[in-house]
Structures are given as structure tokens and as C-alpha cells.
Image (cartoon, rainbow, N blue to C red):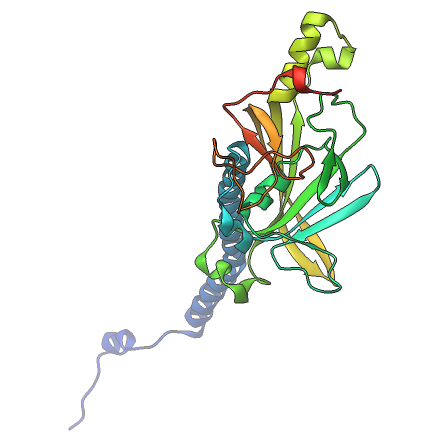
Length: 285
């Protein structure tokens, strides 16, 4: 018995033609190329947004810690790899690390968060004559040729928990923090006007009104055995109304009245006191 298949039914059961297959493969290839080409851009955008968020949060954290004169943030030793201070008077440089210095080491020890905030709060015009000695402070004359270049390498404070682990120290997101604290200057300073009334006001202002400028640059990475900093930068600025006093950090001795570290005119550790003010009568110019 012979069965005949209608012509129209044989056409319905036929497969794709070569032209249709080529078109399908071309569409798939085009889609793959588009996805592969856009995917790295999306990953980079996500990475940049994450880093920018960390920088903004960390910058605000550092600014408030410095402005408030914080002394109890000992967790900062887990994030600060070092603080380096280069001063122009004798072209010396001092490096501080949260690791005890051993024989042959060239750095000084950063035992706690008070030391970190104290160094980052040092005025740029403070007369630093050694790694742990400042002279002639407080100073009214802001036209001094002194300049302290203070910078720190910091692992992200608000980053992921993985970055906080010790094994991730070399791979964690890091940035360079540069701190500049200086008295606010006005037109009277630039004009050299020293009238009695205005001069006293200017002296009071130089002792109790400061600008804090923090510059964060990222990322920090090692290349060829040298530390390099990426092209990204963000600047944070703020004002502080209150005196800036240097204190001797001794955890066994504290002021009976305030509970803070005792004041010391030669200490390199500076702290803001937003609700207290200095008077020019006690200042030697």
C-alpha cells in the first residue's frame, strides 16, 4: 500500500534553510559581542562608584574626628599603614607606623588612635624641630616659612569586611590622606595692618579659627618597589572655631579636671577644643 504525502504537508515539516541559520548565528554573535563589550564598562562603573562612596564616607569620618579632637579611636591603627611628616625648616622627614620599631627600623611607633589624630591635626606652620618636638607654640605669626607636609596611607575604613583582614592588607583598597590645618587669614594679614584694635582681633582669630583641608587620592598601589598614587582626588574643607592645643599623650597621666591628656607646649600631637578659646595675652609672637 503506497501512501502519498501532500505537497503542502512536506513543506511544513522541512527544516531551516542555510540562509536562516546564517542569519540566526549572526544575530547571536552580534549579541555576544555587544554583551562582552559592555560588561567591562559596567564592572568599571560599579568599581568606581564603590571607591567614590568609600572616599566620601571616609573623608567625612576623618574630618569629624579631627574637628572634634577625638582621642579614643584606637581602631584606626588597623587602617593606617603609616603617617609621614616632611618639614621644610631642616628638610627632615619622619615616619610613624602602628608597628613597634625594632633594631634598625627608621620609623616611630603609633600605639593608638590619639597619636594618629594628633599628628594629622598638626598645623602646617608649627615649628617641628624633631620627630617629637615642637617649639614656639601657640604661634600667631602665620607668615612663617615653616610648612609641614603631612600625609598618611590608609586602608578603607568603610570598605568591605574582607578588606579589614590582615591577609588582605596588600590587596585592600587604599588611599593617600593629606592633612592641612592652618589659621584662617583675612585681608588685614595680607595688608600687614597691625592697628591696636584690629590687631588684637586678628591675633584672637588666628588662635581660634582654623581651616581644615583633607585631600584624598586613590588608589595607592605598589609598582616597581615604589608607592604610586592613582589619578583620582577629592578635597574636603571645613572650619573649626576653638583653640588648637598640643598634648602629651600618656595613658597613665590625665588632667584631673577634664580627664584629657595633659597639655605640653612641645608635643607634636595637636587636638582641637571646639568649645574653648585661647587669648592673645598668653602668646609670644
